[in-house]
Image (cartoon, rainbow, N blue to C red; front, side, top):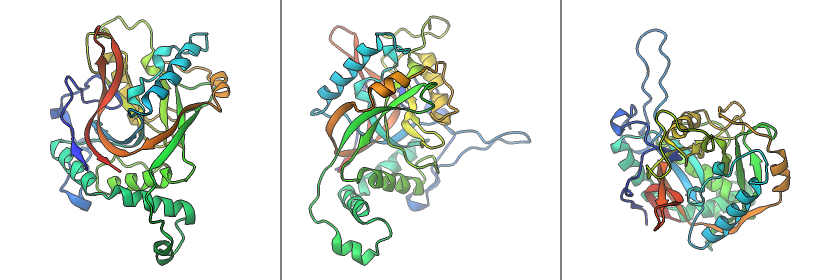
Length: 346
């Protein structure tokens, strides 16, 4: 059953990792009504020459990838990858995203308090198992099959969604990129239609920031925005001084907006601010980053690499922007994770 998650200790309100950019009171968007007619309003500037103001992103809809059964497998793969980066491949291991932040972003949101409550109700009302079955039908027969034929051929047995995370792909050009991601592979072909149905539903309800690009599911592995060296100047936050940071989501001309892409941060406040700005612009060919590097060697070396096998997609979550740092007994940061506000099991 869906349930609301209580705020984590010290959790911040940024997308994909980071430190809080503004107080919630500064959020300039509201949910106009509820139900299918609701819409997230974007504040427009007044007067001549004023452009429409982009809304502050506060939450994202996602399919989490990390659970008890798969975390060790993902952790081992990421540690191996970080060791390889230390051999001089052009990017710091600090750019590698913490295992607890890995997820597949379906869309990003800009919500006030009433909007947050409404999105929870919409998630709770969904029959996710039925959506997975429908996705299986679409994968088998396509969307052009007549409704009566589809109903007659629908499989009765529910089979859990399972994927493999494979390869390492660039968000921009291979020789000049700032973001690398792993691709979810589903032998049954259900993950994409299931994810597209969820994105369409929450967009129609007015919760997701509209994105007309095709949905490109991905798990961000590397983002150089979190590896900028020499951040000791004004506004610098030491890694242990804060237990929360902001992050973001993804997108591109061919790769849609996604909370994972909007960027996930784990370094310092300045990186988080830059990350939040980049989130709204996406991770496409024109996305801004302090460092682009030639990832051609990495991409070739990891083209057949399997980050994790048989990952069970067993829930849908609404999470706050900004990953929270998780400290070990000695006070060191051992992982990061996004605060889940609502979740529903499939």
